[in-house]
Amino acid sequence: MSPRILRTWCGAAALLLSVACGDSGHDDTRADAGTHPPDGSVPTPDAGAPDSGTPEEDGGTNTSPDGGPSGGPDATVPGAVTLPFPTLQHLTVEWAFTGDANANGTVAVRFRPAGSSTWRKALPLRRIPAGSNEGFSWAQRHSGSIFGLQPATQYELELTLADPDGGGAVRTATATTRAVPAPMANAPVKAVTPATFASVAASAQPGDLLELGSGTYTGFDWSRSGTEGKPIVLRGTSGTVINGPVNLFNQNHVHFDRLTINGRLRFNGTKNFALTRSTINATSANGGDAVVTFLRAENAYIADNVVTGITPWAESSLGVNGNNQGEGICVTGPGHVIQNNRVTGFRDGISFMEDDAAVDQYSIDVLDNDLIGNADDGVEADFCAHNCRIVGNRLTNNFIALSSQPSLGGPTYFVRNAVYNAVHIAFKLYRGSSGDVLLHNTVVKHGDGFGITATTPVARLHARNNLFIGGPGGTFNGYSSGSAQGSVLHLPSLTTANADLDHDGYGSTSGTFNANWGGTRITSLNDLRANTTEKHAVQVDLGVFAATVAYPASPMTLYAAPDLRPRAGSIVENAGTPLDNITDGHAGSAPDLGALEVGAPIPTYGPRP
Image 1 (tube, rainbow, N blue to C red):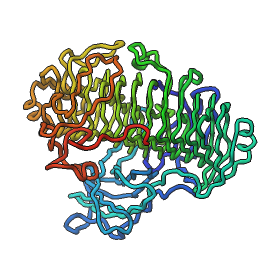
Image 2 (cartoon, rainbow, N blue to C red; image 1 turned 180 degrees about the vertical axis):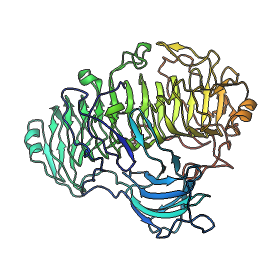
Image 3 (cartoon, rainbow, N blue to C red; image 1 turned 90 degrees about the vertical axis):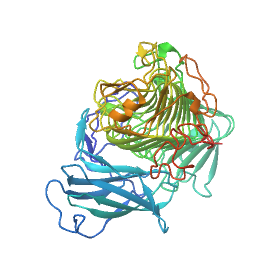
């Protein structure tokens, strides 16, 4: 996505991130949306907003592990715990602190459903040092996510901060995940036809379900809101088609279901919007965009849709200057869930806003989507402030699979994504990206298996249990896929002092093992293990898969998505390291490398039945 200039006041929010912005627009027709208060205070959710978490202090003083008083610059001084914008399946956890000059404080996390007697461990929070990049700045804190939760469920959390220099503390908190959006129970159903749509829409009340009968409707501006538990629902039936753009600006609790829209759907400034089980066909009007909010919105749920663009899969389409158009699904603001959509034929399949247009991009979930034939990025998670979770997606035939350009301190999570035929690179960690976390991804691509050709430092990169396979490279529309033989690892701008990669699998169909680790040349697996953090890396080839997986030798082919499950008895079986809340319930003695376990069912990518 090219930068969009948008000026608005942006508050620090609970994430302790700030940016100075001003006020312009992506196009001449969009409406202005609500903005943050100019004093930088946190926007207060509406009265019906989901529980954002109730931290509870332990009531004790901060002490060192031996019980003595804390003190000195190396001791941690714990601050406030916040749990901003719960989603359906995840919780964001932030713990502010000062001190800890020697950076050795840690935070362990346990959680359980309220009333349960059994605690589960989550990944420890990640220590985020204070920093700034691209006009944004953030304070130091511990930050992380709890994964794989149930919707509409209250959870209890226990956070344990430990610092050998003093300042240890235990905090407890509760938070409730959001419910899957649904019509009000016994909602009054109002039959609608193209002829009656305008009058029925003008009188719609919270809780109403407008059932659009078969026929062709013109695009419209929607200006009615529902309330918590009483959304206004527009539901299509067989033969319902809307031709033209649909706009809903600054609304709340509006749900579109089972609609076919030929044109752009725009929800600038809207809270608690849902788009489900619908078909969105982009057109050349409005730049080829499909489902977008160009201004800060909150808590959208965009799920089980088929979103189709107008950009062909062709070499001339590739890259930032290619002949490509349109954003498939584009959001800014916190709390969005983009799940189980099939998005094909755009510049970017799923994207966040960039530069001054990026506002409060945190606590965002991109889950289980099927992304095919997008000419720039499959998922562009750029300018994520923290706790954006890109989990379980399948990305086939995309120029770049996954972008984090940049992560603003992190953590930005990429977990169990299955990538095949990423033409240029699988992970675009550019513009000084900091705090990216790569866990259990599988990549099979032309050229370098894991290549990042950024000219700026790639900082605080953390990776575990990934699987990268490449091969002989080439050039496509001026972009290189990798070296002639295909490096297994090409990270020349990696900041090695704070990189933490281990238990990953690397291979090239050329049979060679060439790597670049922060400018240091590596020529063998033993060399990699001896001279980097990858002490438990393994060398792999395409034989690690149970099914036949072909090398994508002709990247401009629209390949069918292959079965990327590993083969029993292969070197990747049991080669991973256990990760709390990520690999719970794995088979065998240890987790398998990559996105999928041996013998596991293939996940549902794209719309669910």
